[in-house]
Length: 102
Image 1 (cartoon, rainbow, N blue to C red):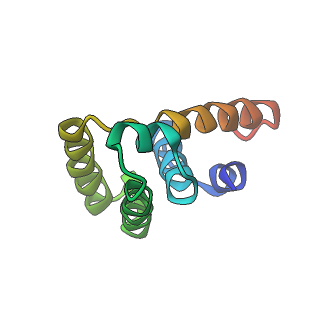
Image 2: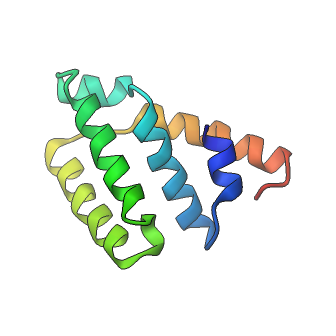
């Protein structure tokens, strides 16, 4: 799901990668996030936040950028980490480089 999403994305590379990360977050159960939150309910919350971010148009829009900055602050305050999602993004980047998508 992440590679086709990245392939269809437009704009600056960092924006495309951040949006792809949030696409991954919207779909998976990130075990690192669950561990940090000590609560599996965080998965549903993270899915909702990622979907809202994507619905706002991602980081390439003013609303998406503002929402991401607020979400980032929440993650810092709660000591949340999207380590599992980041690992999947790294694999997606590797595959995208192999297929000349980026």
